[in-house]
Length: 285
Image (cartoon, rainbow, N blue to C red):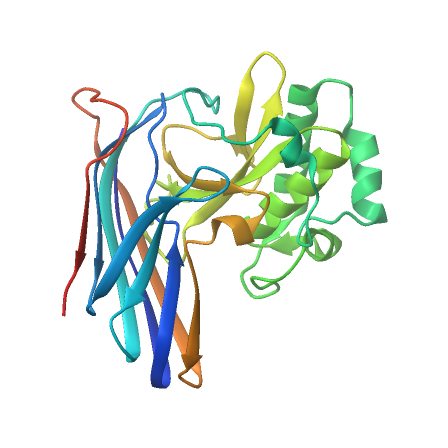
């Protein structure tokens, strides 16, 4: 499948903000099931973009506007060819040892209810346990964008049995790690089967390390393993390691942010190119 992504993030401040710095994790890397055809990052204000990698091996860009700004708009477009792998990830660059992904974080810290669930689901087979966990969260939680926020943790989302894809992923990670299964957060994009192509946010799911298979992607929000409709962008211990845009500024007063994400299939890919990407980065006034 060829997936086209077109999305924008716009920050507006009440007054001009100075010393603005934005860390971007918006560009996917290639692996055996994902081949980047092209990728472009544009900003509407003059500044500098510096490419790098973070501790997890994600592609990053640091954006520094040339001066004070009252509005910062980021526009990302690209196309990626994906191959059906039934959720099994191969050919990815793994910078850290798997044991790192057993570490709980502030957003995944388990409470007694999550620990009890882990004991109930642990059947001694990592693959079976993760499938059971995926199905249980899909069946027992309700997708609701109004009951959690970016700082909500797994224990809270599981207690109210509701949240967004970020919350589903955090609960999955918390339970899997309690079962001794290395698991990590994944941010990316999903071509939805219901025809909705424009959404207010990107998607999130989880990957668990399964013996004899490697990393396998599970999406508890949709009750399934990842398919060719999933475009993987960044991984980490939780949402904070994968947030598409994080930043700092001096002054500016009140801040508003608007996000629009368009993800759609443009047809089957005609053939596979080399792993990697061709990326254009442009800053313009």
